[in-house]
Image 1 (cartoon, rainbow, N blue to C red):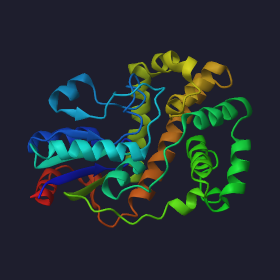
Image 2 (cartoon, rainbow, N blue to C red):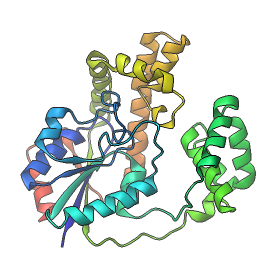
Image 3 (spheres, rainbow, N blue to C red):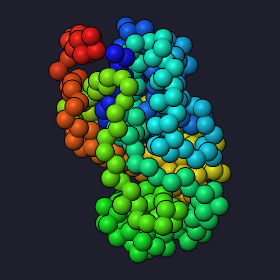
Amino acid sequence: MNTLLVLLGPTGVGKTEWSLQIAEALGSPVLSADSRQIYQGMIIGTAAPTEQQLQRVPHYFVGILSPEDYYSASEYERDALLLLRELHEQYPVVVMTGGSMMYIDAVCKGIDDIPTIDETLRRELQDIYRKEGLDPIRQQLKILDPVFYNEVDLKNPKRVIHALEVCLMAGKPYSSLRTNPKKERPFRIVKIGFTRDREELYDRVNRRVDQMIVEGLIEEARAFYPQRHLNSLNTVGYKELFDYFDGTCSLEFAIEKIKQHSRNYARKQLTWFKKDKETIWINLSDGDEDVMKRIMLSVS
């Protein structure tokens, strides 16, 4: 039976290099499960694979969309499953790697049957958000879906706006649609979770941010500054630098915020991933000696 090998874990843990080594050993392509690496030009800020890394192994879902394009986890589920059907005709094992929890769950478990959002409605809500902020959208969501209102991160524009979009399109609460059972897939799924001791992981995150600054993150973010209202750019690394460009904070403060928010996101990822009892966890702080062997045994 064909296999999808999923390599997951928090930001900064080392997924990219391990995915390359494993894909090379298996002769497999890599599907990126990163909701930001899918956009063009956001290379440094999303730690997207370099040109050299892309030459080592065929990659999919990297740099294929404009930052202005809307793309959801349900669309990723559809596109990834279609691609996997093709790839599995040639490759018995395909590697998927990333840290976007919803993208991974969409492919492995299936996502709820959410209605397609009308573009006019999407633009109307985005206009409200740009002109009046998130509060009026939050208040409308509270009325239409108090259950989800009490669950969602009310500071996350993407989540709040999308929930209201669904409420308005479906004519029923978003929370009532999020109950679909796990979907069966025509391939075996093996999940490997990478983690590290917390102090080491946070140190790696901090050093990666410093390296991003050296590589040109400030210049990359400045090029996107005119598009800062786009949802794709509501991303750690860019939004903090946009505040610096706005003059509301110093560069040093913005960089520290990038580190802090990256660490917070890593913690959130681990909390989410740890709920899945099917994942085989490997602590990379224990050394690399048996990692490849364990993974090869898991897909044999």
